[in-house]
Length: 575
Image (cartoon, rainbow, N blue to C red; front, side, top):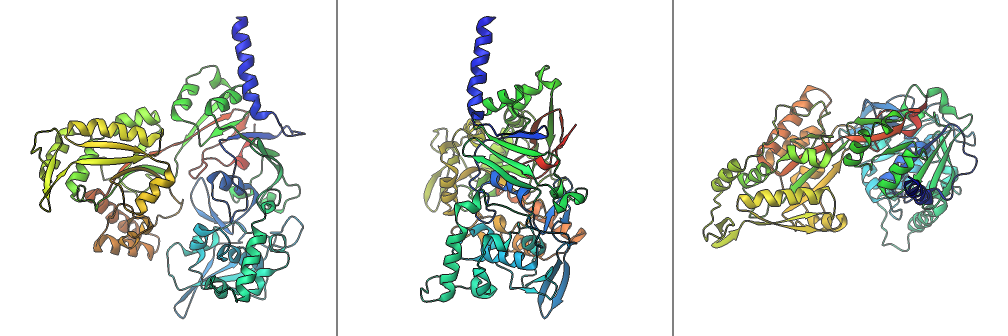
């Protein structure tokens, strides 16, 4: 008994390393959350990690946002949704900012702050590539005599323009550009700036601003925004503490949108890379929340612990993520859809669902979330059937002509062996899927070589179309899906996102119609037509939409959200 007690103390001492520099003056309404790694920075224009985005939700506010529980698009800094205008072939989105919206210094949030934020994102010297592409379709931003009113103008006529332009965190110009450098460069000059022209005065201004904007201060202590919390302490690789603002203008709006909720007095994010250490900290009362990075196996083990279940709530909910196997449709081995369907029939996905997710996942048949209203439930999951797979392979012309156990066929006067490379990140879920497929495929005469690569090298190969099979995951926007980036033939280019090579005139036409459609039955029918083509062509093997898993101390009233990170810490209420 004494030996057990000593070992328990040792474990607690090990765990406490992650808390060896605890925040000072912790308050009773303090919510402690585990994150597995430190955010890269908290400047929302420059940050690239999902952990940073999660924390930025509490520091900053966008003009509009998706409700994480209903996925309805709602006004936040904006007083209401945009008024749509049409003039001379252009579409305008007129927006009025809430009169009560002010910065921490009491100055009003105005259209100039919006214009500055988007100019900062547009600046070619600012490292905001992925975010820049979202706002590039804006042709101009017109201000008005009312400093709270402005209009985005575009000739793009894209169905997600309003969301693309308004779902960005707004920054305070007087803080991030105190000398108003970007006011000296108009929108189109900045948009079409020739960065190679070293004589341009505008180039010099854009470069000077970018250098100032990249100051680490704006990514840490200076990352102040219009949101309900502010950074109080940040100790690298230890913790990050946010404190609720007092007398904040948005408190009275907490019932109108989750973005305005601020129930915990402070939120402390503890950086604990190892899952086992985080679980021990939770059991010992040092943590209140583990979410996002908790494995299904650990979740299930904790749930089955009768003692732990008396003080911990186990919460599940839908996610905005799905996992799939990308197939190179242009590879001669895989160009026949019968071959691709045969591969799909070689996966026992019901078994994998239990082994990998302990059942906390939904099988899918398309690149959309099952929770979407336009998801086609009439398309049945592909069954595990080795005999059917063998018949499909025979229909595609595969035989074992040399009796070596591996199928082959003639192609351009040479023999092709049915040998495939399956690329996956090391040690993860993709590796386990690859091993399962390798074992089942061998029974059907297919040889699969598993190659482990870090995700950045995997994506590099895929952008160059140098792969056969690859295990991937995709996180989706909570609004309507745009199939164009991943499934249009126009995206099948070097560095494009159509890795599979899927598509033709019919699917491209449907995608284009979706992108310019109005909400309603017409768009739903287009989505379902697209899914039927995807289902028939089998350009990829769609596996699962994992559920969000979260464990929370019962002293907090919490619920799961359908967007990452699967919860909103500011909306947790102390019981």
